[in-house]
Amino acid sequence: MIQNGGEKRHTNYGDGAYRLRPGSFSNVTAGSIPKNVITRGHRCAYGTQHRKAAETLGLPTHGAPMPFSIPEFLIQFLTEEGDLVVDAWAGRNMTSLAAELLGRTWMSGELMLQHIRTGAELFRGRPGFWLNPQIAAAFGR
Image 1 (cartoon, helix red, strand yellow):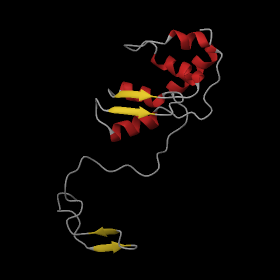
Image 2 (image 1 turned 180 degrees about the vertical axis):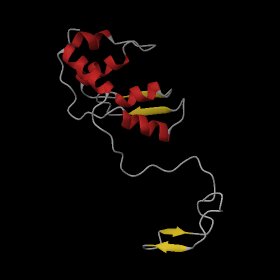
Image 3 (image 1 turned 120 degrees about the vertical axis):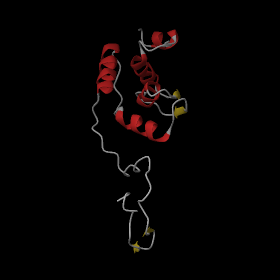
């Protein structure tokens, strides 16, 4: 379609909010805009790692887990390397982990101390990992 100069017709759909003009779709672009609904399974390797860490620590798992692939997709789509990603309700900290692995700076907040503690395990072994001794002591580990 691009090589042929794009659309040849002119039309309106619905209430006129979508208009097709001659020449539409004639330019090379970086890609299409994602659909409105993101469909992903709810299980992932990082989620399994988090669940095992919670069990080892004797702490509850998060009640509304989000798979790693959702924040990973959104961070890739909406930010560039070096950008700051903020998650005010971190939960398992999947958004922060995705930001870290994608080369973004990140900041997260979480009200539930047990989620902070178990989410920290996703970063163990990463450069710069440090767990506040008071958080570790709060759970005897």
